Length: 355
Image (tube, rainbow, N blue to C red):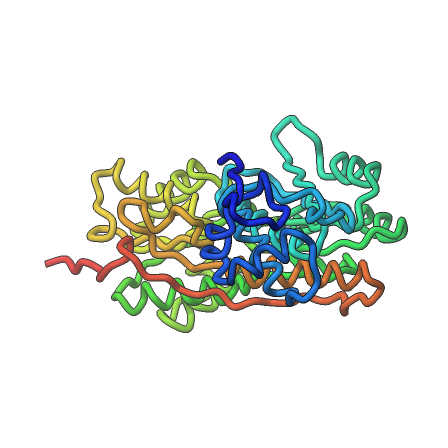
């Protein structure tokens, strides 16, 4: 949208700026207040000023040069990839929160054959970043060398980790309760009458997969009386992809499961695909539960029952912890665990009884 001029009858120095009435309506303030903000005058509350600036952004207008905030510094966000929609969802909240505090986010995405996490961190340091947020990085891999993070801290770069607590890394961690997520999913399927339930999760070396596995085994004992060996035989470790979910679902269906809990929504879509490939109906013949509740998941066919990560709360907490460290008031280097929510949709249903 291009710029439009203020009404010619007004003499407020706003020639070439958006119409005051449009901005006032969007921000729910008076035109006089909009005029004071656009002209950089005092006497406007900070929250009101932010509403007016947000209205400019929403309506697609450029902010006047004098109102463009100088960046308080660069903050890197290192994520594994953008294919899984949960990562862009986290990135959006993190970037919005950083921008709200005056920082400029720098998104660094790892791609197969591209820059590694270490290379991305090196590039960020060369650009003088104020801090770094790691989302599902090498810290979540129990086989990875964690001395890289000790060296980063020694160089004076504050950082915070999301997903995948590692006691060998001294930093604030923000995680969903993966064990509780698995327990919720199993309890939901058990309540629907399912007695043969399987789990499809990522490689066993990753902390979230380990924790979901632990929660699954515990829930199978609590809800169905299954012993540990029985429950572990119904866990399939696979890739964090649609294809990985499909392969795992095939192995679990061969074992006679009627319900499948998945470590991600993408894996759950793979499980649904495998059920369809076998001529099975979801949820009439097999129920599927995902994890994440990425933005498009409610629109799948069938709409996916899933365990929702509290993305907004987790991302906001991670940024808050990072900025406390940046300002010289680091929070305790521990794990902050957030509770997920079960969202029931159309991919789960009552088990079919033979006969």
